[in-house]
Amino acid sequence: MSVATRLDRLLANMGYGSRREMQQLVKQGGVTLDGAPVKVADMKVDVGLDLSDRLKIRGARLDPPPGLVLMMHKPVGVTCSHKDAGVLVYSLLPNRWRAREPAISTVGRLDKETSGLLLLTDDGDLLHRIISPRKQVAKRYLARLARPLDGGEAALFAAGGLILEGDDKPVAPALLEPISPNQAYLTVTEGRYHQVRRMFAAVGNHVEALHRDRIGALELPTDLEPGRYRLMTPDEINAIFAPGASESAA
Image (cartoon, rainbow, N blue to C red; front, side, top):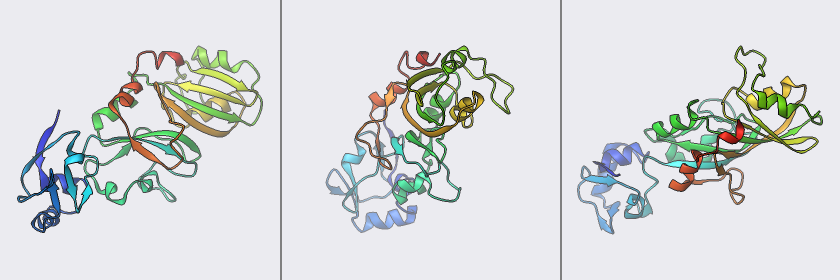
């Protein structure tokens, strides 16, 4: 479903410049629609999925319009924040995208030392659907541990009674899948602060490396290199909520 909006307002909200600057750009012939120069900056345009194919700014294809959803392969050493010191995840996006309104936000967070699948969107409703505790969207992590598993962790995590240090409510059941003495997948349906690291700490172990490879039934593509991102398809977005994707963590 498309929404009609003023062209100059749309371009300003997408970070191309102020509305006055967009009006001047139109006068200079810098905006074309379906191959023809736009004559009126306040014309209404339908913000549909095909707009980026139809509208060009200074000869370049229009950025993805509002409603974008990205998947990113977050590298280690990058922070999911707008304000913290160091390299921020938003610095991996085009500069103009950081001026967009509504703003692009990460869907939850991965800590600085965790890599893997990270979603970003300017769709607030979708963001809240994904992180809502009621949806119980499963997230799978590959953990490399300092010490070998002792064999009792899977049953303990699956029981759902583990209380983490500083919490007063036990964590929900989680699925542990050992793949070597010092490596395992852990699938959780909550988003507590440093949850995976704290769960292993609670059983006397330490996570040396952590990587998220799956959200719901959506897997990080093997060809998406660290630091790279791409737009998600509707099928990929639906995979986040695929039936059975969260039950595997129970």
